[in-house]
Image (cartoon, rainbow, N blue to C red; front, side, top):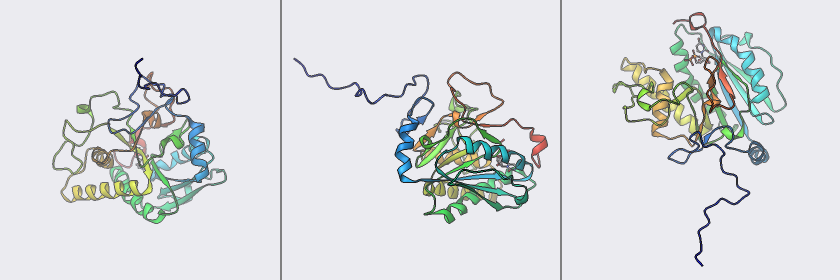
Length: 290
Ligand code: UDP
């Protein structure tokens, strides 16, 4: 009688029930989709560690109007039952809405200057994230950096934790990588060649452990500033630099587009649940320049 190797998983380990999407990268990072994790088990693993999660959100100029819904929906869906500290960067600290927060959750408001160019607001985020993390070291475990013009609609919790965490952009996840809007000019430090790249990641949501996000923010800021000295601005500002960084330093966890959808996009069959989504906005009306 021949001995057959054990190839079936033990019955108490249920493999991911998704066959319609990629659930692991070639460098063995999980790609998180609805149905690939057990939220109760994960929360139970992290709760005894009493982890704390920092969030950065920028609300400069007219974007202050998005803050209330962002904060309210974060209370309903983002790391519910865990310690969360939201850092709001705004040029209008007096206009920050008061939102009731559960015990263990709080908000800190930081003043930043206004700007006449939205590209500058977006670009300065990496610098402010870098300096915030330098202050927070030893006080927080994880950080997520999120766009304010977005709302939570479903659970975003411990399944998203990792060393360096990227979110797949909802606009390009079905495209070939030659179509990704990476920076294609070799003069820029955000350059990626047509044969490079894994996913196109969002600039509007990323995170991970403090030291990992610090290194990324510092590198993106340095490269963005070097580009500026050379008279070049990458196609999608810090998002382009983030994509270059994540090509070289692969994320240890990748979140599916459930974690940053766009309200104007119709739901595709593989998107069973939208957890966080950008609201539809009139750019000409809300940006200081178009
Ligand atoms: N932002 C801001 N004020 C502005 C422009 C941008 O506070 O006038 C911040 C805000 O947090 C926003 C983020 O920068 O969520 C990204 O900008 P935007 O949403 O315009 O970029 P998109 O994702 O639409 O390309």
